[in-house]
Image 1 (cartoon, rainbow, N blue to C red):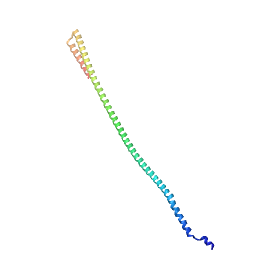
Image 2 (spheres, rainbow, N blue to C red; image 1 turned 90 degrees about the vertical axis):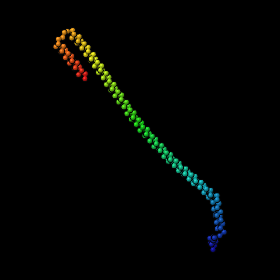
Image 3 (tube, helix red, strand yellow; image 1 turned 90 degrees about the horizontal axis):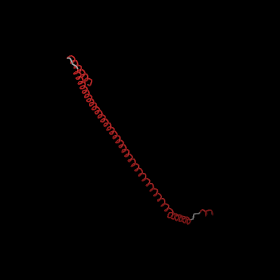
Image 4 (cartoon, rainbow, N blue to C red; image 1 turned 120 degrees about the horizontal axis):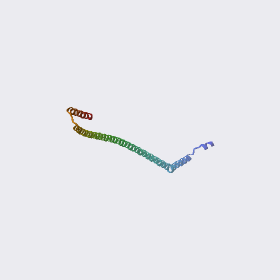
Length: 171
């Protein structure tokens, strides 16, 4: 029966072991579990703060991107407006230059017509002067010789024909 002594259960020993276990648990809880738990909570809080900060930074970046896109659209609209204004102004300036060129061309044509009319009047005046000179020369020659009535009539007819032919050529 000696073997039963080895296997026997000692109640005091169990109670002391249990008391040691409870004391060890309480000591570990007070000195190890609470600081570790506090460290883990602080670490979780720091991670959560960083996550919140990253989310705010991402939201700010998205807002900045949206603002940048808005500014780019406004700049594009402004650039398109400036380009269309410049094209319109260039078109208007081109039309103005064409109108000025047409007006100048018309004034040149009118001046040329006026010059031509003046030259025509000048030529007519010269022709009249020549007719007067020729008439006085003819009169002088006629007076130098004696004219019979037939020569006189022929001379007048010839003169009238020449004057009529001269006027028809001018028109």
